[in-house]
Amino acid sequence: MSLRVVNVNQTVQTEQPFKLVELAAAGEMALQGYICLGAVTWHKHTDNDEAFLVLDGAMALESEWGRVMLHPGELAVVPKGIAHRSGSQSRTLVVLTHARGLPERKNGHRRILGIPGGGEIRRIKLQQVAGQASPFLLEPMAKVDEYGLQLVTGNGLSPAYINYHSDVIWLMIQGQARFEAGGETAELDQGDLVVIPRDTACQWFSFAPITLFWVGIAEGYAAE
Image (cartoon, rainbow, N blue to C red; front, side, top):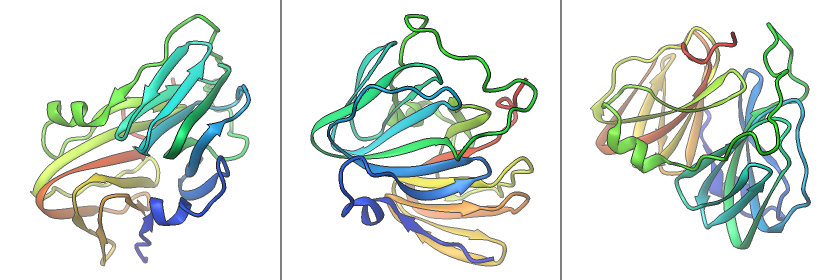
Protein backbone atom coordinates (compact mmCIF):
# COMPACT_ATOMS: atom_id res chain seq x y z
CA MET A 1 0.00 0.00 0.00
CA SER A 2 1.25 3.50 -0.85
CA LEU A 3 0.00 6.59 0.97
CA ARG A 4 -0.72 9.16 -1.72
CA VAL A 5 -0.85 12.73 -0.46
CA VAL A 6 -2.94 15.27 -2.39
CA ASN A 7 -2.62 19.01 -1.79
CA VAL A 8 -5.97 20.65 -2.39
CA ASN A 9 -4.72 24.10 -3.35
CA GLN A 10 -2.07 22.85 -5.78
CA THR A 11 -4.55 20.47 -7.42
CA VAL A 12 -7.34 23.00 -7.89
CA GLN A 13 -5.66 26.40 -8.22
CA THR A 14 -5.24 26.46 -12.00
CA GLU A 15 -8.74 25.27 -12.80
CA GLN A 16 -11.51 27.47 -14.23
CA PRO A 17 -14.25 28.59 -11.80
CA PHE A 18 -16.76 25.90 -10.80
CA LYS A 19 -14.96 23.08 -12.59
CA LEU A 20 -15.03 20.14 -10.17
CA VAL A 21 -11.72 18.33 -9.61
CA GLU A 22 -11.82 14.99 -7.78
CA LEU A 23 -9.38 14.94 -4.88
CA ALA A 24 -10.12 11.65 -3.14
CA ALA A 25 -12.79 9.00 -2.64
CA ALA A 26 -13.92 6.81 0.23
CA GLY A 27 -16.39 4.20 -0.94
CA GLU A 28 -19.40 6.00 -2.40
CA MET A 29 -18.23 9.38 -1.12
CA ALA A 30 -15.93 11.77 -2.97
CA LEU A 31 -14.11 14.96 -2.09
CA GLN A 32 -13.96 17.39 -4.98
CA GLY A 33 -12.41 20.82 -5.10
CA TYR A 34 -13.44 23.86 -7.09
CA ILE A 35 -12.82 27.57 -7.38
CA CYS A 36 -15.88 29.67 -6.56
CA LEU A 37 -15.77 32.97 -8.47
CA GLY A 38 -18.99 34.51 -9.70
CA ALA A 39 -22.14 32.44 -9.23
CA VAL A 40 -23.74 29.29 -10.59
CA THR A 41 -27.41 28.93 -11.48
CA TRP A 42 -29.91 27.58 -8.98
CA HIS A 43 -30.04 23.77 -8.98
CA LYS A 44 -30.87 20.80 -6.74
CA HIS A 45 -29.76 17.18 -6.28
CA THR A 46 -32.41 14.54 -5.65
CA ASP A 47 -29.96 11.69 -4.94
CA ASN A 48 -27.37 13.12 -2.57
CA ASP A 49 -26.58 15.65 0.14
CA GLU A 50 -23.69 18.06 -0.39
CA ALA A 51 -21.26 19.53 2.14
CA PHE A 52 -19.35 22.73 1.33
CA LEU A 53 -16.08 23.44 3.17
CA VAL A 54 -14.27 26.71 2.47
CA LEU A 55 -10.48 26.55 2.75
CA ASP A 56 -9.65 30.02 1.43
CA GLY A 57 -11.70 33.10 0.58
CA ALA A 58 -15.38 33.65 1.31
CA MET A 59 -18.50 32.21 -0.30
CA ALA A 60 -22.23 32.85 -0.13
CA LEU A 61 -24.30 29.66 -0.06
CA GLU A 62 -27.89 30.46 -0.98
CA SER A 63 -30.67 27.89 -0.67
CA GLU A 64 -34.37 27.32 -0.14
CA TRP A 65 -33.39 26.96 3.53
CA GLY A 66 -31.76 30.38 3.70
CA ARG A 67 -28.40 31.99 3.04
CA VAL A 68 -25.09 31.61 4.89
CA MET A 69 -21.66 33.14 4.38
CA LEU A 70 -18.80 30.67 4.66
CA HIS A 71 -15.25 31.73 5.53
CA PRO A 72 -12.06 29.63 5.83
CA GLY A 73 -12.62 26.65 8.10
CA GLU A 74 -16.41 26.85 7.89
CA LEU A 75 -18.75 24.13 6.65
CA ALA A 76 -22.41 23.80 5.65
CA VAL A 77 -24.52 20.89 4.37
CA VAL A 78 -27.31 21.23 1.80
CA PRO A 79 -29.76 18.29 2.01
CA LYS A 80 -30.89 16.47 -1.09
CA GLY A 81 -33.87 18.07 -2.79
CA ILE A 82 -33.07 21.63 -1.67
CA ALA A 83 -32.36 24.14 -4.43
CA HIS A 84 -29.15 26.09 -3.89
CA ARG A 85 -26.25 27.93 -5.48
CA SER A 86 -22.80 29.13 -4.42
CA GLY A 87 -21.24 32.44 -5.32
CA SER A 88 -18.30 34.69 -4.50
CA GLN A 89 -16.92 38.04 -5.59
CA SER A 90 -13.33 36.88 -5.10
CA ARG A 91 -11.44 33.64 -5.71
CA THR A 92 -12.55 31.09 -3.10
CA LEU A 93 -11.26 27.54 -2.66
CA VAL A 94 -14.03 25.08 -1.77
CA VAL A 95 -14.00 21.35 -0.95
CA LEU A 96 -17.25 19.59 -1.83
CA THR A 97 -18.23 16.28 -0.19
CA HIS A 98 -20.95 14.24 -1.90
CA ALA A 99 -21.75 10.81 -3.33
CA ARG A 100 -20.01 9.61 -6.49
CA GLY A 101 -22.34 8.83 -9.37
CA LEU A 102 -25.75 7.32 -8.62
CA PRO A 103 -25.65 5.92 -5.07
CA GLU A 104 -27.15 2.59 -4.09
CA ARG A 105 -30.41 2.78 -2.18
CA LYS A 106 -29.94 0.49 0.80
CA ASN A 107 -32.53 0.26 3.57
CA GLY A 108 -34.32 3.33 2.26
CA HIS A 109 -31.55 5.83 2.91
CA ARG A 110 -31.33 8.82 0.54
CA ARG A 111 -35.04 8.59 -0.28
CA ILE A 112 -36.22 11.40 1.98
CA LEU A 113 -35.82 14.82 0.38
CA GLY A 114 -35.55 18.15 2.14
CA ILE A 115 -38.69 20.29 2.02
CA PRO A 116 -38.30 23.95 0.99
CA GLY A 117 -38.80 26.07 4.09
CA GLY A 118 -38.62 22.97 6.28
CA GLY A 119 -35.30 23.77 7.93
CA GLU A 120 -32.23 25.98 7.79
CA ILE A 121 -28.65 25.67 6.58
CA ARG A 122 -26.35 25.46 9.60
CA ARG A 123 -22.90 27.04 9.46
CA ILE A 124 -20.31 24.95 11.31
CA LYS A 125 -17.07 26.59 12.44
CA LEU A 126 -14.37 23.93 12.56
CA GLN A 127 -12.16 25.78 15.04
CA GLN A 128 -15.11 26.22 17.38
CA VAL A 129 -15.71 22.47 17.23
CA ALA A 130 -11.99 21.86 17.74
CA GLY A 131 -12.00 24.01 20.87
CA GLN A 132 -14.67 21.78 22.41
CA ALA A 133 -13.30 18.43 21.21
CA SER A 134 -11.38 15.96 23.37
CA PRO A 135 -7.88 15.25 22.03
CA PHE A 136 -7.67 12.29 19.61
CA LEU A 137 -11.43 11.58 19.71
CA LEU A 138 -13.58 11.84 16.58
CA GLU A 139 -15.99 14.75 17.09
CA PRO A 140 -19.16 14.49 14.90
CA MET A 141 -20.03 17.65 13.00
CA ALA A 142 -22.41 16.73 10.20
CA LYS A 143 -23.74 13.94 8.03
CA VAL A 144 -23.70 13.52 4.24
CA ASP A 145 -25.99 10.62 3.44
CA GLU A 146 -24.70 7.80 5.68
CA TYR A 147 -21.17 9.19 5.86
CA GLY A 148 -19.97 11.20 8.83
CA LEU A 149 -17.97 14.41 8.71
CA GLN A 150 -15.94 14.55 11.88
CA LEU A 151 -13.09 16.52 13.40
CA VAL A 152 -10.00 15.30 15.25
CA THR A 153 -7.53 17.35 17.26
CA GLY A 154 -4.40 16.41 19.16
CA ASN A 155 -0.71 16.88 19.80
CA GLY A 156 1.94 14.17 19.95
CA LEU A 157 1.36 10.50 19.14
CA SER A 158 -2.21 9.52 18.41
CA PRO A 159 -3.80 6.17 19.21
CA ALA A 160 -4.27 3.74 16.32
CA TYR A 161 -7.38 4.41 14.25
CA ILE A 162 -9.05 1.67 12.23
CA ASN A 163 -12.36 1.78 10.39
CA TYR A 164 -14.20 -1.46 9.56
CA HIS A 165 -17.02 0.30 7.69
CA SER A 166 -15.31 2.22 4.89
CA ASP A 167 -12.17 3.83 3.56
CA VAL A 168 -11.41 7.07 5.40
CA ILE A 169 -10.28 10.47 4.13
CA TRP A 170 -8.12 12.63 6.41
CA LEU A 171 -7.70 16.32 5.45
CA MET A 172 -5.29 18.55 7.38
CA ILE A 173 -7.05 21.78 8.32
CA GLN A 174 -4.33 23.18 10.54
CA GLY A 175 -0.80 22.03 11.44
CA GLN A 176 1.55 19.28 10.30
CA ALA A 177 1.71 15.56 11.08
CA ARG A 178 3.33 12.32 9.96
CA PHE A 179 0.87 9.53 9.14
CA GLU A 180 1.73 5.85 9.31
CA ALA A 181 -0.47 3.10 7.85
CA GLY A 182 0.19 -0.33 6.39
CA GLY A 183 3.93 0.07 6.80
CA GLU A 184 3.97 3.35 4.83
CA THR A 185 4.47 6.92 6.05
CA ALA A 186 3.38 10.29 4.68
CA GLU A 187 3.87 13.88 5.77
CA LEU A 188 0.72 16.00 5.81
CA ASP A 189 0.78 19.79 5.85
CA GLN A 190 -2.13 22.21 5.88
CA GLY A 191 -4.38 21.53 2.87
CA ASP A 192 -3.03 17.98 2.34
CA LEU A 193 -5.22 14.89 2.38
CA VAL A 194 -4.69 11.15 2.39
CA VAL A 195 -6.99 8.12 2.06
CA ILE A 196 -6.63 5.22 4.51
CA PRO A 197 -8.18 1.96 3.26
CA ARG A 198 -10.87 0.14 5.18
CA ASP A 199 -9.60 -2.28 7.87
CA THR A 200 -6.19 -0.55 7.90
CA ALA A 201 -4.86 0.88 11.16
CA CYS A 202 -3.23 4.30 11.05
CA GLN A 203 -1.51 6.61 13.51
CA TRP A 204 -0.15 10.12 13.28
CA PHE A 205 2.40 12.17 15.18
CA SER A 206 2.69 15.95 15.49
CA PHE A 207 5.01 18.30 17.34
CA ALA A 208 2.26 20.90 17.79
CA PRO A 209 -1.58 20.87 17.99
CA ILE A 210 -3.31 19.95 14.75
CA THR A 211 -6.85 19.87 13.38
CA LEU A 212 -7.97 17.14 10.96
CA PHE A 213 -11.16 16.80 8.92
CA TRP A 214 -12.38 13.17 8.70
CA VAL A 215 -14.79 11.57 6.19
CA GLY A 216 -16.01 7.98 6.48
CA ILE A 217 -18.77 5.71 7.75
CA ALA A 218 -18.75 5.71 11.52
CA GLU A 219 -20.95 4.25 14.23
CA GLY A 220 -23.79 6.65 14.88
CA TYR A 221 -23.97 7.56 11.19
CA ALA A 222 -25.14 4.23 9.77
CA ALA A 223 -28.32 4.26 7.73
CA GLU A 224 -31.40 3.31 9.70
